[in-house]
Image (cartoon, rainbow, N blue to C red; front, side, top):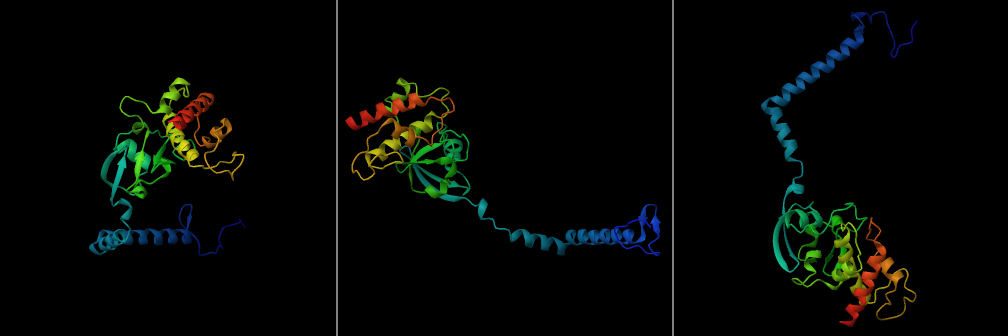
Length: 236
């Protein structure tokens, strides 16, 4: 006797060629159940059941939230989807496209902006979380036609090639210099117990700027630009 997936009996004769009686009954039951369910869903009672199920689904994800932001000195009152990132808000709704979308995973630093003076990856930040915050992008660094010292230094030392990461590099460097002035130490600081301004060596610059990736490899120019700007900032 052949091996069969289910026990076989003499009453399990073929109803149609290739289909045994037991299999035929199973298929008929499934088909009948499907037809009854379809009729139920298409009837008024079934429609109400579907409506109740849909009504039970939370709708909060699509409800917009009121948010107030101060971006580059201008105040904005907005209603935002709570899922919108700060990066997408800046680029797509406020038309501040200087902030770049690189990896969109917080790994390259191209989207770096400053929130209340601290640098963050805007691709990882939900815009609604920063309600009431002051945000500075690369567009807000210059004063009219007068470039920020770091912007001018990047030009002089050719701290860029394709330029895609440059806005994030500059915003990160501006915030980093403030951290140095506040005495914030890094992993390469020789004496973390020393109070006051940390000596900004090339190793310090590389360590503190390591979250910003330049795929073109313009790091020597970036380090030189930050070093020059840091001296000017201290002199000022």
